[in-house]
Image 1 (cartoon, rainbow, N blue to C red):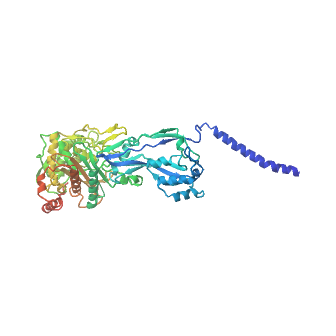
Image 2: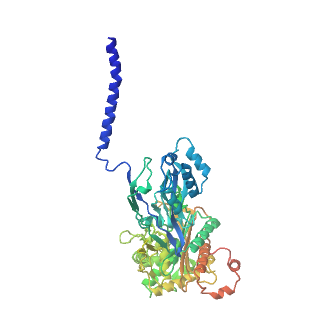
Image 3: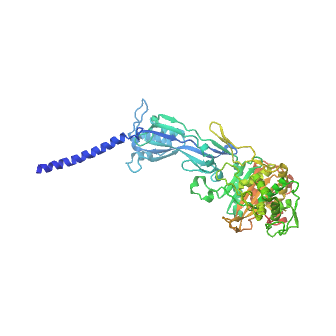
Length: 612
């Protein structure tokens, strides 16, 4: 009995060990015959990312705004360094400390510190200790040479640099962690900027790191195309600086501005505040991300009076002109529920030209009522309202322009659409409409991109020089510019927008902010706009400025707040573009702009009339 018990005690563990060995063996066999395994464990294939293209300002390669810088990330594996055999043909094996010295010299690192890293006992993270970053190709050549160095893992990286920080953030946009465009030009031209990735096939060691001299295929990536903008970085700086000043000076919550070439509709500057840091785009709020210059619909207010008058003069030149007279009484039985003029007392009659200069809601409301919904709608469509301009930025809105053939305009809407109510626009649509007036009636397509050029020199994109259409005749456009001259004068609503030495054809707008859902308007909250063409006699630029007030303030009118911001931006742009004054006689009257403003302040009071 004793012998039998001893036999079982002997064979029980043996059988258990045999069972475990059989189980492990079948698992190993099954893993090796797995049909999903198509390549040896140490073979690998990896996509090699392409360098993302550069974004340039209007001055081309002289002034990059965004670029990608390639670099390499290095890490140390002390075990691989110690066990590797490193030698050049005909030379003795290199010692591990000689290898450490080579690594330290290449990276400019402390030799003693690296030596301690190699000699330290194994611990958590011991086999993947960061050595640093470098964009130097010579450093990469040395550390990737298996006859000089071992134990260094190398990872290809690239970093996106926004060379002017937050400036132009809404236009340039941002990229995410995978270098995919998330906003702005980065998103709109992501495919062109990304380039074509390369491919590497080779072998890796037991740690999963590539053995560089075992590469079998190495296809270099094709760098991304470069994007050339129409933005003048000098004018952009001045526009953003003036807009920030305006928000601070007049207490507005948000604001936006556009500077556009009067002939080509090229955008020379575009700003929207608040803005964001492109490197921290994922941490920004929706309010910061919104480009209000293209992606925000709002009632424009009295700046639309110019479009109404232009439509009338162009459609019925024999009936309407600068000297066409209207009665200024609101209780006119021929019209239904006319808008008021904020308590202003006018002469019994007023010409259309004076109605633009003094911004009479009653007169322009009567004109719009007389034109009727169909004519007014068609005129606004010709100026580009109610549709996207096609500017090369994501998120552009259509605006709101009800079609009278599909939706009835009530009698009140017929007069209010003409003064900038009942309709909604985007800032770029409004600037585009004024560009048509500046360009003798021909509306060009607004654009921020001049061209996109591949690495081999091919143009992948070029802005379409074909006009978007004729809004009004050349004669009507010149008539409108003449009518608008008086706005930026002592008799108009934007005296503080006048620029000494230059003629300004512009218009103010003060629009009460509507409550979402069509529930009326916020009391005491306005958006103040000024849009101007300068010089009016030979237009060079169109500048639009809007300040959005979220509280009641005495500066809420376009002439009092947006007008001075316009002046700062326009004057700086004219100087950068070397535009000669068309009123040189004004330059001889005063020594500087401050003296000019002081005299006008004393003569006419501190603030412009508040009719718009």
